[in-house]
Length: 422
Image (tube, rainbow, N blue to C red; front, side, top):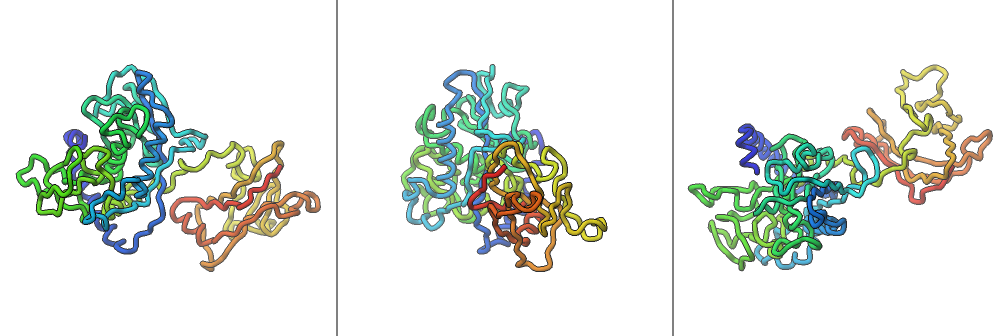
């Protein structure tokens, strides 16, 4: 697939080289200082089918998400099979996956689309990724991992895009319906969901472990750009007995997810592979880090602002020199009730649950890095409907707000016991 794209666009090779140099630099700079927060990737699965058997079940799709989470967190039951020489290298990559619960428009979704097609099969020509050619258009590929499941031409199991190798609308992973998940239509020996584990590895910038040097004069001259994977001569198939030595190694790491062995015989990523994937997410797929795809969808009124609840700018923060003389604070609105925090009264015809408050600023600063603020929900039992009893509150750091603003993100303050109000 990559060779086909490079034939169409010779500039891909230079772009990938620059990306590899950047990735290596990032990994070196973070050596021993990696931020190991778990990264969650929202997934949308596009099922494109002609026959009923190809329209795989929600349960089969969920089984694939389960496999991804097990393999990328090293929670797979076969992790103990890693040979002793490579056990110290086996890694929890701290990358997780969820079926999207919020679509690009903020609406609730199960993370699955289903498209009836007239196409008998699909190939590496990307037709499955376009509605106009019998497939399904991608959701925004900077915010979601798009996976298409369809009837692929034999002998394809799947294929994927390396970051920067295709136009954004074609970015993602394609898997044959016979090799997706571990129940339903999944067929041995590729019936444990490892085809997707392998292809998502490519999407996260991993290369084949043998370095893709097949056919070259030096079969040991290739590299997968990862330092802790041993050099090996070629791909492995089936279930090799360890050790199968090549290129002077202690045995091919055939059990690595980026080799070609049967699903039952691959069960590890290395620390170096995990670092490469995380560096890729942080630098070349950074939109995933701020995606709301894994968050529950909000009811229509829940994400609006307090004043002008049916639409408008809501609460507005002003710099001191921008405040009109008649104003007495930073927050202004059409219903300020005189409280120091400038409470805004909101009346709803229906009972609402206030799960959290969102602070979404363009600019933020504080004179003290340890300053805390408090988000509060009151009832309106004070004089003339002013704030009365505290129903919920939680503190948060202004420094956290500043960091989020610098990252073009927002700050959500959740209430441990969400109040029910009207």
